[in-house]
Image 1 (cartoon, rainbow, N blue to C red):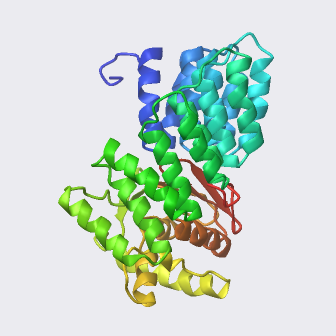
Image 2: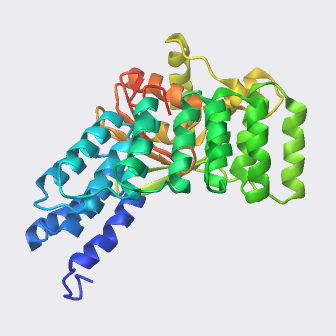
Length: 382
């Protein structure tokens, strides 16, 4: 477009920024930001909001806030973008502080605002505050909760272990619960290994979305955690009969403008030999430091050694190994995964960040995790 002499306008910019966010293309996003400043679009509220959203979704939440603070005017979409950004990064208190700041302005919160607030509370474990804001949207702003808000509330309570209370919300809610609501309960049952409620949630989900493989996998995980291998096998049979195919876990890392993709057990990458050698070396150091593989996550009734080897070759671990080899020491490693990061990879990445002295930023299907010095920004609550 520019090569043909056509100058991008604000509409062009806000159309391209989401692509940068989806691909973690931060370098291209920064180039667009530079063009915005040179072209005089810096104070356009729509462009500014797009930049806030892009930086937040690329893992640079502090830069997103800097852009937000420099905006001369903000609309409700601008506030929502920053609040949602804090939410997906697990910065619950920052999101709530910003919401309080918003309440001091003439901008009224909308339904999306409260999805951001409730999501932030859920990812940070702020149960009491989440309840407060759920009630606040009705009493203070006259906003009737939608299905998405009930899903956030169920997720908030379920993650915190209040499974019966979450189930009670579903039974009493004035709307017919959709898959998002039941999925939040099933996900919570997976975290806390509640078989009975998990089965109830799964039954509803199998009726609502019979071809969604993720729900079968979550229930399989619950059964495997409990050692109920016959039930795991029965679920696999059900999936085959219904022709439900599991979405493979896939991780991406961009180095030198090239996106590298890894699947579980992947050995097709040209650097596979070096990647596995790196991971084997790290694996020994991790065990010496106290790492214990969570073999309950392997949905196969096989020997422990086989389970450990399977865990070692998860896609995000392969991407991290590639990142360590191909990026400069002390620089952050950015990974994107299409599914929720498993608890073993989460634990392993904490140890790796400590051993190699690198910050590792992982964006999974639900949120960001910033690993540094053996700790994660989520506080092991996600």
